Image 1: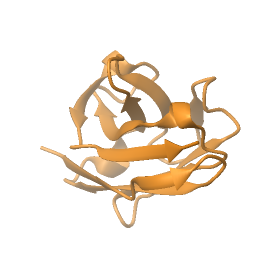
Image 2: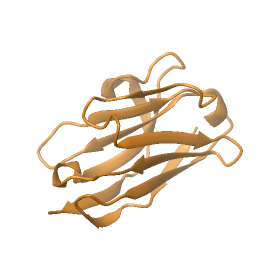
Image 3: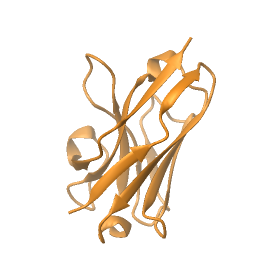
Image 4: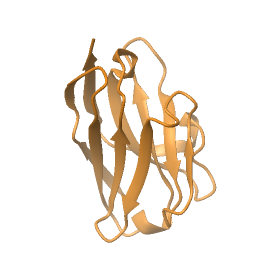
Length: 124
C-alpha cells in the first residue's frame, strides 16, 4: 500500500509562489501516474494536474494551466507542484494522489490513494 505525505503549504500573498512536495512510500510509485487536486471550503474536490509515471507527460486543468507545473523525481519517490501567480481563489487544501489504474488520473474521481493534504492560503 502506498502512503503519501504532502508538505510545503502555507500563507502567501497574491501573485506569489509556492512549491508543494509529496513524498511517497511503496514500490509502485515509479510505475504509476500521480496527480494533484485541491478542495476549497464548501466546494467539491478539484483535479489540477496529472503526470505520467515516467514524468514525460503532463496534463492540467484549465484553471491552473500556465501557472502550475507538476513534476516528479522517481529516484526520490517525490512529486511536486510548482505554483506561480497565486490568486486568492487558489486557497484550498491541496492533495497529492495516485489513481486507481495506470491509465487514469484525468479526473478527480479516478484517484483512490490520497495524502492528508496541505493548506495553501493566498491573501489578497
